[in-house]
Image 1 (tube, one colour):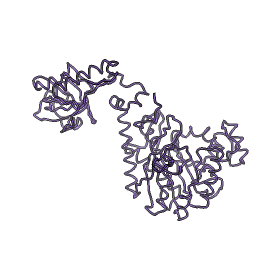
Image 2 (cartoon, one colour; image 1 turned 120 degrees about the vertical axis):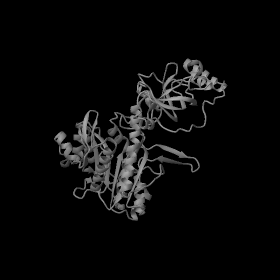
Image 3 (cartoon, one colour; image 1 turned 30 degrees about the vertical axis):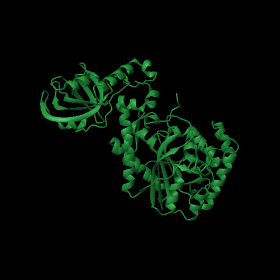
Image 4 (tube, helix red, strand yellow; image 1 turned 90 degrees about the vertical axis):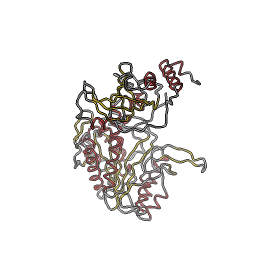
Length: 493
């Protein structure tokens, strides 16, 4: 057998490799094509819930799963499938000679199929008396020790497959994530919104202020960007009249650092609705999140990190400036650009002379307010100079019609009354280009085609983005974004 150096380095693996060879010598394929199951463990539990202790049935079933425990030299084993656990009784009174040979070559972690009859033991354990054993996948690596599981947090993320085998909570978290996304999609489709797909590879980065990942297309000999947001393409579809409401549950990529709330590859919902403004998107966000919470947790009151949070609508609306004034006693609405910069730097910001009034206000908000917004809150009154895609505020030219929703101190949602004036949009892009020339790598470049689309006429439009990963964190009480992403980005070892 052609084996690498790992066999010599790992005696436990070497023993399993010997068993693999022994199975093949018996003419048994340890990795067959398939196995026809009749039932899952949870189905059997429900079907035979009233079967008395000590009672046997004549019912033959076929189950399959992973061996998680072996007792009495394999006479009793616990077989786990995706639905639960069933006990297997493997005895010479029921198994053939080949079955008994197979039994001796099984290990914890092996995936097997079992055919047998259902009974309940005198101790009350639902059990299948095996009449045939089929090896479906011989496990060559031992699982972590039963009672401690996979305790190494780094290893859990790097070897998610082992984490899922060992930790029921990890399986439940990712299953709940799937239900959250399914409920989100269902809720939107039921209300007539059209699900669409937009490019992940883009010739111009746009739709958000972020540093992109760059790749190269060999055939076209050109650089492309992994999208930082789908916004500009989604609004092009609204221009084209594809539907009055379009949405995408999308993967985005931002070349930024890692943290408990940041992963360079993440999932969000973006939705654009014609003929409404950002206040309509507030109601949409509230009702969607509350609906999802009710469906997956049973109500709108959740607990995260020991803090009780009430997701029932409506959520309060507070301006960024008034929240900053409450926290610091400083009214930024009364300050000019220079004074705002000086105040922000005195409070811990590190702003240069090129920073605008809005950057100063936002930096103090981030330093002094964000973490305190534990209950759902829509923060409105965003500065114009940090919001290049939002329509101007109807009362104050320094502001735009934009909100961000905060829960537990995190930004969960971001929304605008979308800017649909192509002349104003070009000016905003040009201001972004100036910031870019001054060294701001996250500033958005001028997208001529998007401006051309606006010149054909974008109806009044509300847009909303919701971070799905952070929402899943909240609804699963998960402390890190890595807990809710099956395969988070990790630094190579």
